[in-house]
Length: 162
Image (cartoon, rainbow, N blue to C red):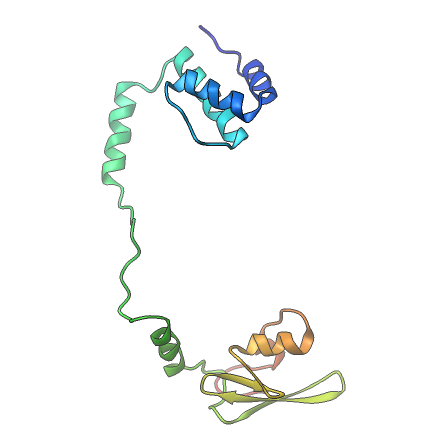
């Protein structure tokens, strides 16, 4: 039996999701809870082709099983040595970016007719009384669009503004 794939796709795409789910149950012999029409059409057409033209050979099935057994898939992320997000932030602050001046100093930039002063803190940056987590957040507050903070304040090399 030969399946005309193009004809089957046209017929299946004319069906609604409820009809596709019924066809899926007919073809696969089990119900599905999936409601994604494109997925259902593809799976049904694949199954019809497999039934008409034959499925994978036994040799191909064995090889697929071998490959699946050898796959080193990580199902669970590795455990972190840190206790939580607070330690992650403090670990970041222990090694500050070498382009930044030490906490307490200011970054100054002349922008659109005014001199901007941003004070470097141990846990962020202060600009006009507001503390920001990142230099890019300060640059965004100033410009109104996302801007790389290091580029905006022209920080290059180790520890300071140019």
